[in-house]
Length: 433
Ligand code: EPZ
Image 1 (cartoon, helix red, strand yellow):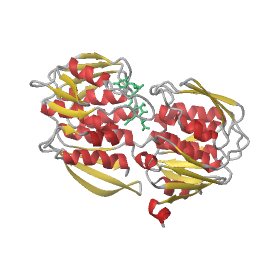
Image 2: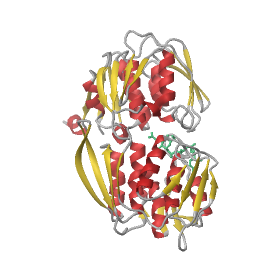
Image 3: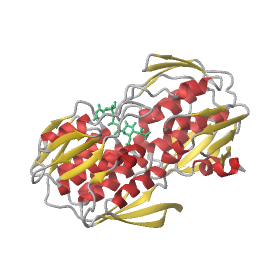
Image 4: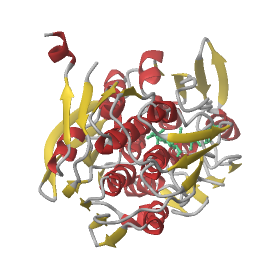
C-alpha cells in the first residue's frame, strides 16, 4: 500500500486549483440511470471513488465515454453516461463494500425498471451508516422492500407513486435517492426535513435540466412532480467545498497564504467564519478564496458539526488538527457520526494534547510543537488531518494507507508540492525494491 512521506515545517504559499466535488459527482453519475439518453458531466474529479462507481455502472450495462477536458486552464475529466437499457439491476456486495455511495443506484433503477437488488453497505469506520430512511421513504412510495442474505430487494408493481415523506434526519444520501426516485413517480412527492447540502442543489439542477420538475432547492421542503421520462443533459459539477476547506486549513496550519482557485466561498461560510474568528484573514473573490495566516497568532475556537449550513462533519478532523497549533483550548463536538475521532489517537502519537469525552466531544489544547511519526487513519478526512499535522510537525511523518486519500483528494501531493510542501508518495513497488 502506498504511503506519504512528509517533512514538516514549510510555510505553504501559492495557488491550489479546487477540483469538482466528489460528493456531488457520485449522485450525479447515478442520475444518468434515469434516462436512456446521454448525460454528460464536466469538471469531474479524477478519484478512485469515481472509478469504483463507474465500474459498477459499466457492469450494469452503461456505456461510459471519458474525455480529457480543461476548467480555467486546469486539466479535468468529462464523462458521458448512456444507459440505453440496463443489463443488470444488481449492485453486488463487492462494489457496495468498496463504495458506499453505490447505493445511489437504488432510487433511479427502481423508478425506471421497478426492481433493484442492492447489497446493504453495512457500517464503516465513522459509524453505523443505516439506510432505514431511504427504504421507508421508498415503501411510502409504493415499493416492496425485503432484506434477504444481506441484500435489499426492492420491487414495484408499475410505477412508484408520489407521497408526503418526513425524514427523521436530514440525510444527504436519502434526500438524493428519493429525489431521483420521485422524478419518475406518478404524482407529486413532498420531502420534509430534506438535506440542504450544496451537493443536493447540484443534483436538483441536473435533474431539472433532464426534464424533472423539482422545486424548493436550498430549503428543507422539496416538491417533486413526477414526469413520464427524462432526457439528455450536460452539467458542470460544482467545486468541492470539503477539498477547499481542507486546503484552507493547510494555509492556516502552516501560517501561509493560499489562493483557492475555483472555490465557492458561499458554500463554506461556517468554516470560514471559524477561521476568521481564529485570526485568519480571508478574502472572498468571485471565483476564488484567499486564506492568509502569515504572521498570525491563531486562537482556538469551539466547533460543533451540524447539517448544512452548519459546520461540516467532513471538515471536523482537519479543524481539530488546526486547533492543536492555536492558543488555548478548543472544544470539538461531533453530532453527525458516532465514531469520528479515530484521528485523535494518531495525533496523540505526534504530541497532541486532546481529551475525548465519550463519543461526541474532544477538548483540544494548543501545543508548542508536534513531532513527526508513522501514522495511519481509518477514513478519508481523518487521513487528511494527519497530513496537516505532518506539514507542521518536526521531522518526518509517514502517513500510511494513502488509498483513503485517493478516494477523495485529487492529486494531493502534486497540489501540496505546488505550494511548497515537502511531501512525496512512496509507492508500494518502491518499498519492495
Ligand atoms: C454524506 O454521507 C457524505 N457522503 C459524507 O461524506 C458526509 O459525512 C455525510 O453526508 C454528512 O454530511 C457522500 O456524500 C458520499 P447522511 P451520507 O445520510 O449521505 C443518519 C466523506 O468523507 N442516517 O446524511 O451517508 C446517519 O447515521 C463522507 O466524503 C440514518 O439514521 O450521510 C448519520 O448520523 C463521509 N438513517 C446522519 O443520518 C439513514 O437511512 C447523516 O447521514 C441515513 C442516515
